[in-house]
Amino acid sequence: MAEPIRALCDELIKAVNVMMEAESSQTYRLEALKLAEKSQTAVVRHFGLQILEHVVKFKWNDMAPQEKLQLKNCTMGLLSDGTHPILQEECHVKDALSRIAVEMIKREWPQHWPDMLKEMEALTAMGDTQTELVMLVLLRLAEDVITFQTLHTQRRRDIQHTLTQNMDSIFTFLVGILQLHVNEYKKLNCIAGQELKAKEDSSLLCL
Image (cartoon, rainbow, N blue to C red):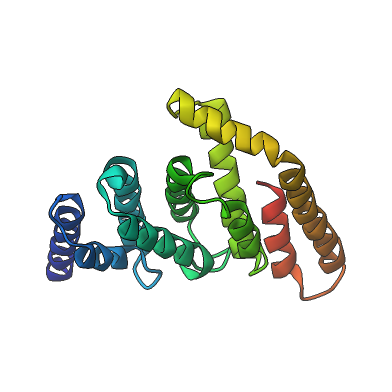
């Protein structure tokens, strides 16, 4: 038992060193992303996601445009197909993944990521798991920008202004999701054998 644990620790240490070193190549950074893949345990994946969040927070401005694009695409890939089903995935993993997306949005939207809202809406069409992640992203973004105000003044104004401009479409989008899952919950709750799907819909209504 001690040997696998030692090997895992060595792997984690190597990943941290690779991602924190300024001279690390993009190839090694992408190798370190493997920590966040859903084939790993929840503990390892959460650790990997925290590393990615740290990279976005503190290394973003030092990265080349192509590196930023690759990391953004990897994050969108994790949002679309990088987690277990909604009722099986650990809450702390979902929260960590949503925070990476939020940190990117805070640095790129709207100037360098104008289609962010459309991309998030497209994710919700993929299923309940992706819908929950998108809702978490929007929740964390609103908290950081409006409630906690964790951004520099100008960036906060830019994002808040863009949120205000898009409020009608965001509101329509959110109401549509809520209405869809309320209706699904009511319908499935009356059908024997559909308790699991009804629970998935109810979990979205609790966000």
